[in-house]
Image (cartoon, rainbow, N blue to C red; front, side, top):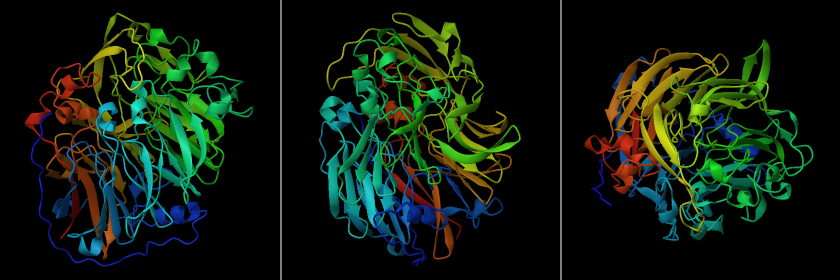
Length: 599
């Protein structure tokens, strides 16, 4: 694997002072405190900004009129080379950030940003990187009740004292020897730390686990596939597609024999939560293997959006987006919670931009499908989503099968949108999404399971949907399906946009540009070339009366797996290497935290 020297930028001294206290009162039920904190735009207290996952800030000191004066205020190397897919947290006057493997965790006092307040270096199982399918990434930290909650690649979950970095408790959430890793960000709901698991390409059967915030004791675990007592379905659990009870052992009935034991459905994406409905939302990934002929049936409940009671884990409803997935269209992308005007009525909705290229709008109370619109014009694997049945109308010519090279399927397995979270602005009722504009050829084949080894069963080759356009940043209406504006990018747009009340959209690019565009038109207003490509998600905060924007630079992830791991064959990296074979001419590896402000 080739490596280069890390870029290390010098900071520019700025005056700073404490703006907001960070302590919470009452450790048993921090949901209310966290929800209140998330409404304070001066801070960034959850991975997606708030429980609804909107990634929108009410700050407007930096705005469309003055953003052209933006400058780098200070920077810091993370000491890690691989893909940085997360975002910092800002709690009061402290910033917390986690790197790619080996998952260094830093606390930075914003009053003295040039000095690291504390650093935590987890001691990890060195086997973990070898079973991380799509780079050794980490999607961020969580905070609650004076604790920083973190996951390491080898599946260890940590609770650290936010003031000192001292380990308060730790617990193993899986075993790398079985192909299990953890790359997702936790979410704290009430007194529980919610975490998922990765490893769908290793025959891992996915699950979500809740740990006690104060002790680390496991409270519940809900698998994605399997018997009802393990997926935590009861008689009241609704199949969102039919709006009827899912029925006894609905998952087992959709698999042949014991194939569900290697059934995938991993949970490496994002979590959101509705405190009023008391429901936790997330999605499950692809079934194992990628060869659909080896697993006849719908393969429930892989590729599914779940709503669960956070206290018990029992599912209220489950909606499967891509039954019998034959394209690796993981359903783990975030579910954004908002109110939508549908057929003249205000409905509490969930919007989900799926890898399969459809933006789903569901009633989040029941899982009922309201709308499903293509958000990328190249999507061709399915003609539409039937709103009556909730199922895709698949183009038979794009259905993959063993020993046949099915060509020109759009989107590619990487998806029309991968993990990069969208932003929603309630003022415009639009979603601002960084998307992939890519297609693939897909040849499935029979594969045998061996613990800790890849369990894929497909050769994939990805390519741009249009010449020199691999990504699009869009302003999208999930009710009407209309795209207000589009920015075409030469590489996959793999950085989650941030919107603000300054009428701005911030995002990064795979080749290292950090951009601010006009929210109304998409017009470019500012750009800065970072030391490495950006696959992370910018945040904004206030300190000492001044607004800052922070983002992690550090190319990698599945989008740039060839550069990250030194791969050259087009079908390597699960088919992604050929898509970005010339990216090394534009950027290189190296993690850095960049913080911007107007002087």
